[in-house]
Image (cartoon, rainbow, N blue to C red; front, side, top):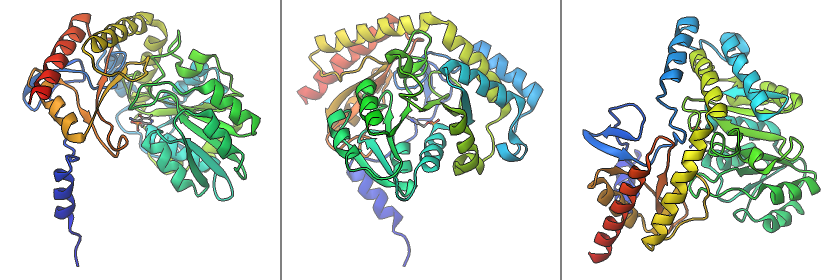
Length: 388
Ligand code: PMP
């Protein structure tokens, strides 16, 4: 017997769930060429418009001259360079935590951290809308794994009362497909009362929230005791690649000893770490990027409400428009594309059944006129679909 892969693929296509990769022929930016078409993009995570910033590009080239191209080995062998180390020190300072550990990507940071902290006999409690990497990590950890209702401290409390062993409460800071903020003051209070630890993955909050771009922890003014395990990624607002975990000396040393996805992988190219030092400086200093984003978010939300479309409760650059079926989300995305706009449809299993959506993301690199263009096209596309 052989694997019947083509039947699975056909089934996926028939359910409107088939994924395709748009082929980008220009660097990241708001105006891109995709599959030969010039499009205005509203679906990148380059929230601050730094992914092709000339100063970061220059730092990257400088990093290649100093450090070459490859990481060469894992961190524990000969892959840990002074470039990586300098970025770790800068990230510890940025997050106000004693130490930070640089990882090659966010998926691995989450996988490595959860599995290093809990195992058999322990408990891991996660928001049901957490990012796939956190859910996968919880499953793989071998700990008792349970998902509480989205952002619901009462639901978390119920699960905490039945928890055994070391207990880790895990949540996205900004929910990646909805754009809303975790209610961290309430969630952390429950966790602390139950002597559990809170781990926050703020992949989409760093750079965007907080006066210095310090993310959801800065936004709510939370201490290291309230959020002992803080994860950030560098491929979104920072515009480069990789991820980090910030926390106590003992946490970081434990990850170096026990986080298998950290131990058994090649370090990220040191030039990327070198370039990220410049990126971090820009994230902290260029406040105008967050101010401009706030203007664009307000403008977009007011425009969508005026069109009579439903918005989610999001104060962040992630502004999804939920349309329901995968078929309708694809049709709306295609209608926008016919008008020169790139907004990808997000479908199950990335989001729950019946909540397929257009995940509109705004960037500090967009102009107000470009947001108006999107609003106008959304109005037209929506009307066109309703009239069909
Ligand atoms: N956490 C969240 C919330 C994410 O959205 C993502 C990626 N989209 C990741 C982790 C994974 O990060 P990376 O892309 O660096 O693997």
